[in-house]
Length: 340
Image (cartoon, rainbow, N blue to C red; front, side, top):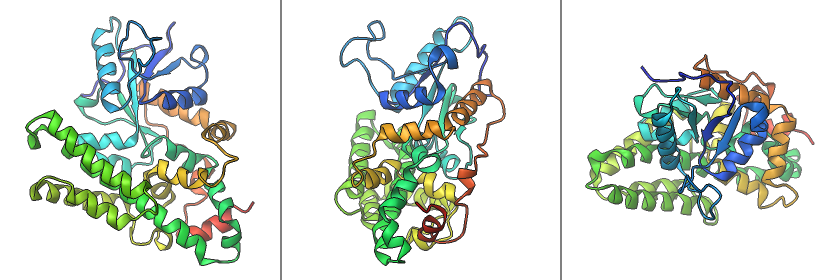
């Protein structure tokens, strides 16, 4: 049985939550409140833990969060007092990408001994929170408002390839992670790391390098594997995740698509870049403040505290989530539901 929380949640010291970057820590701390009030402290793991203020001391990513969480929990005298919060895509490292693509939960845990003390966002990465719960979608609509009101096809032409490529990118990465993480396929960790870097650089290159091309992205990712055996494993996993995602990736705008699939499983960074590159008046800080103003901080803290206690996972009931839960094409929903 997975060891959830043999601990006192509200103690004299805040519970430590390791996260993948200082930007993650800043957002989550803003949403939950100061450590002395919320009982939660979000930090990026340190290389030299004895000197946390030393310059260039932080290190990010999945492995650093996993290792820091394991170390703290192994050394805890009075039960576990540290946890890790990871992007939802990292669940795929344990062969559980379907948990991300088929889960409505804001935060979830895996029933897997390897992930003791680790929780996962119910979306691809933290940037998806701005899309699903915040103001980013309205910002996107404002950018295309004139075209959408006029029924201009240019809006579709601009949005469709971006969503298509962003969704393909998240599926490709989630399909690749369990292969990379399995020692059965590699002679060494360094070999796995090199292949991971090559596969991900092709995905990101096609996603961020000029006009996004989802077809080219998938073809390049499949071709980057060193042999046909691994290419077949990757291709089959992509097909499985595609079923969970429920997306016709040929044309996202004209597909029957549930809101959570669209806003939770696409590559959030790519979609926000599409907005922020054209709207210099808005920043990540503005979108974080919007999340807080909309009351999302309460939902986020409730979900995390429920996970820490091992209670039933809190599923947000916010009407913002269901507002777009329609079978109409995205462009029509944007126009009808988000009028300036």
